[in-house]
Length: 87
Image (cartoon, rainbow, N blue to C red; front, side, top):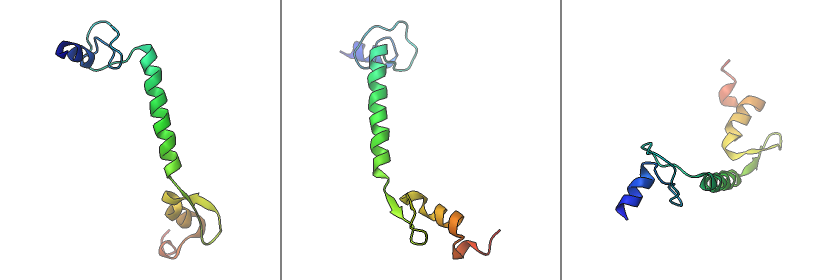
């Protein structure tokens, strides 16, 4: 089993299914079918992270913005008190 794993890690075999890919390239690779699977898995992970970012309502204008961008929204749209002296 150690030889197969080594061949998967050096790129001779697909890192997922073990299909022969050719000469070693010193990094793990995937065959065409497994690349599609890996992209689908990565895409699902990105979508789930996007859903984790909640939107909140701005207290001043009642506009819905992402929680991580609320401070930027307040600075840009409302010139909050801490930023009035700048600029």
